[in-house]
Image (cartoon, rainbow, N blue to C red; front, side, top):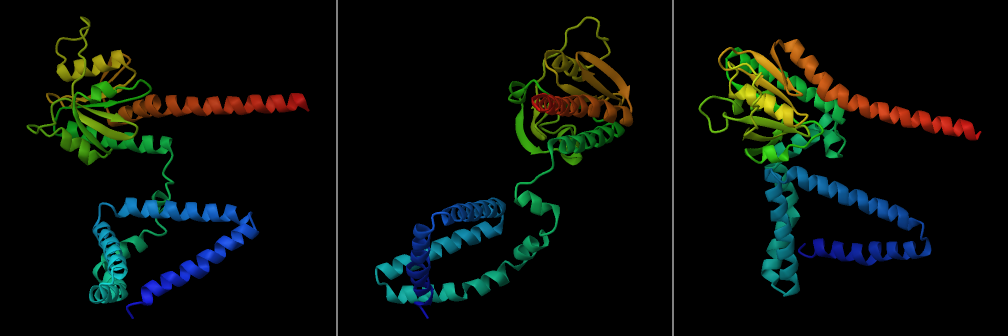
Length: 302
C-alpha cells in the first residue's frame, strides 16, 4: 500500500509523459494544443489559489504540500517507518479532507451557475455598469447620512488623478457600498473627519484633506466641508457630494460651483450625467466615429 502513490507517479512519468513527448516530436502541431492546455491549467490553478488564499482551504493546501514533500524526502532517504505512515495518511487523506472541509466544498459547488463563476474566470461587469451601480450606492449613503444629519464629504475622481489627495488620508481600498460609506462618517470615530475619495470604482482612502476654496463670493455660512468640496472641484475635475450636519441637506460641487440642497433624484441624475454619460458616452462616440471612418475608407477603395 505504501508504494501505491509513488508507483502511480512513476508510471505516469515513465509512460504517459515520455509517450506524450514522443508524440509532440512526431507531430509538432500538437505543441499548440499542449501550450493551450498548459495555459488553462496554470490559469485555473492561479484562480484557485487566489480564491482560497484567505480561507481555511489555503491552510489545507499548504498542509498537503508539506505532507507531499515530507513523504518524498522520507522515501529518498529510506526512512521506511515514517514513509509508510505518511503514505497511509495520504491514502486516506482525501476522505478526511472531504469530511472536514465539506462546507467549503459545498459553497464552491453552489457558486457554479451563479455570477460568482464569471468572477472566477475574470469576467466581471463592464466599467460603465459598475460605475452606475456605485453611483446608486453613493446616493443611498448620502440619503442615509442626510436623514440622520451626519456630515459627509465624498469625492469622485474623474479624468484628473487625485492620488496626492488620497495620500493625505488613510488607505481603505474597499468596494463601494452604502454601509461602508455611512460607517466612515459616524461622528467621533477616527475617520469621520475629512473626505472619502472614490477612484476606479474603489473607496481608496478616507479622512483625506482637501484644498479649501478662498473665493470671496462664496457664502460665509458655508462650512469647511462645503469649502473643501468647492476647492477640490476647482483644482480638479472631480465631483464632490457634501452632506451638511447642521441641516442634513445634500449639495454637489463641480467645476468650482456648488449646487445646494438637491434631492435624491437630482443627485442621481447629476452624477450619472457627469460621471457616467460624459465619460463613457464620449468613449462610445469616439469608437463609433472611428468605425464610421473605416467604413468610409473601405467604400472609397471599392
